Length: 114
Image 1 (tube, one colour):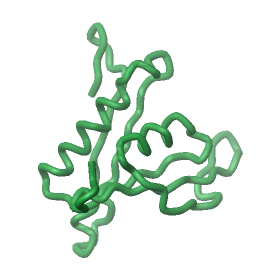
Image 2 (spheres, one colour; image 1 turned 60 degrees about the vertical axis):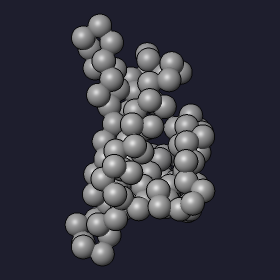
Image 3 (spheres, helix red, strand yellow; image 1 turned 120 degrees about the vertical axis):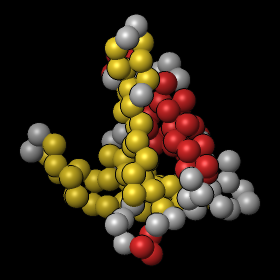
């Protein structure tokens, strides 16, 4: 959780990718920063912390699902080493509009991982 003056301005979570044993080495990262506090490094700090926690937990891969129109979030994840691996078409819906979602991964156990 990121706080400013006692108020929550952002949060990050690390959650199981699947409840199946075969995927125990994978987790999903989620980061949210309130719109009034974006562009100040809060998201970067939260995501970097999640990556460190994933490593400490012995995870092999982190995955992120990001709405295709979320350019800033996509850029942040790529800047910290996540790579795009596919697009899930029309899987979400917001305000009656169907959404595409980008899937990205970061292999923590790879020699080139940040």
